[in-house]
Image: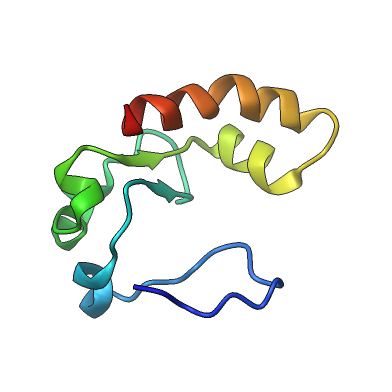
Length: 91
């Protein structure tokens, strides 16, 4: 699934009826809250390739903040806590 990117959006919304069109090696899920099991909460999310390969990474509230705030203080935290999870998901 390819959606137009105009340089102003941070994320790509995908509706439930289009989730099977999501073709990605990795999905970074920026949900609300900690300890989210995206597939357990929304079984339809288990259908794309990334889910079948256990490559959906749901970040914690702190990790989400570090990614979205993008400050000199948050970037090191994001690199230390999120990047290894992403690398492990695609390894």
